[in-house]
Image (cartoon, rainbow, N blue to C red):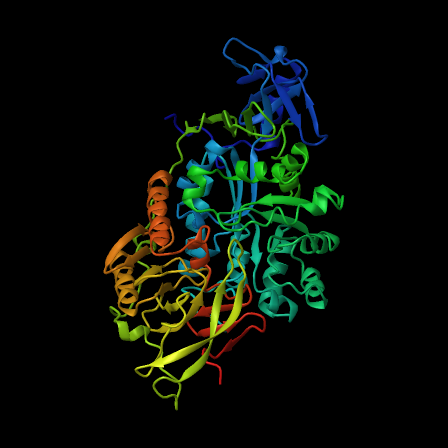
Length: 607
């Protein structure tokens, strides 16, 4: 594997590189690489031209009909034989941690799929390690052979007063991060009720970002498009990715926001929203494609932004319009049109060689002017930082747990055989929102049981940041588990305590204690034995092992879930979001059951 020759830290700025780029374009100096005999896709004009491209110092020097004057004795000449050159793909909104990988391993996984620019919000690690965790992600991203921009997390906790995190992010942290070279803006403003109600902290964080001239990311996870939505838009978020239907997309772009349509491992929101462009005819410049959350298995086996681009085209979007949505539109949104998102002079030399604009086989990938992947194989090095021990010792539980910690006592006055009405979190396949359900459950041995509702099992949130010993119990429906089992995960968006879901309290204790000993990850137990395990030693969120290895472990986990009766698509993502107390309707936190339609705690058992 070739060494990493260029990274955001070593890439010359456009002003510094301009004298050499001018000399090459004028024919006074040779380019490092010239690509000819291909068809160049110009996303600024949606044209495909039989042009040639010259590259030097990690940037495009010449893009035009004939680059022969840019060729010197040492110039690498690449004959394309009629293939297309398209810009490297940009993921406008994503979380590296959702891939269960470090930034270096994430980049190594997606570069062969043509993703050369990423805009990542590391609010997962911020909830566990605070500003120091964000800095670690930022520093590793800066040394990669691609462009990974970091958004400073805005909401840790995501909903103050409804959850407790390992660390909290305040305006002073946002202000400090805005001075770092790789920070592109503020991550998704998840506390939309705080914005609507005029929270001084939320307003101050957005003001700090705006004064730095950087983009404020949005997250409006409510179906209400009335005054609250308009109040949120007035607060300053420049984009949103939480829409799930055409009306959501139209409402956001009408307010001057960019609509980020996502296709992740479990979020399928492109098809239902892209009709705003393909059928309603809205201006496509304000629509952007992204992934949000992609597991390692999806990255390795199905792809990344190339998967999203193919999907958008399959949904009826013109291929060149869809390509704009994951290149130029993204660059413009983040104020980087002169840096990336197109094959044009001065831009970072990020491109893909492909034989088809619809099927998109990714044959070769160039990032920052160097070949980084060929025929699905990484050819560059993605360097790691040295992750400190403090980032690897984050599962702080006071003690091992027993089955009794997961018992849900019957309410006072309930006798053996009585029924109670319980609130139940309802999982929705392929979407982030949940449903607030109720179930009539029996009292057995002084506890509320689930034996008459086979699709209702227990859920618990185990505190793992401050060793309080706290366990919050509740009920969840939709996974379909049909045997004694439990699955535990220290990935529990966004507070990242430990979520345990199971049909058997003994198994729930086994799973929780296994992760305490392991130091973080995901484990599934059924019929008395561990059936799958994904170790995640860094912050209990990420592995620094290669993506293929983590993907194989994750696939073993998914198979174990299926073996236990679960039929949901990518059900692990649903599991990991059950504590996300800013997406309706019902969630669980270390403080209790949260009604996210009203943003307040609610009782598990109805009175």
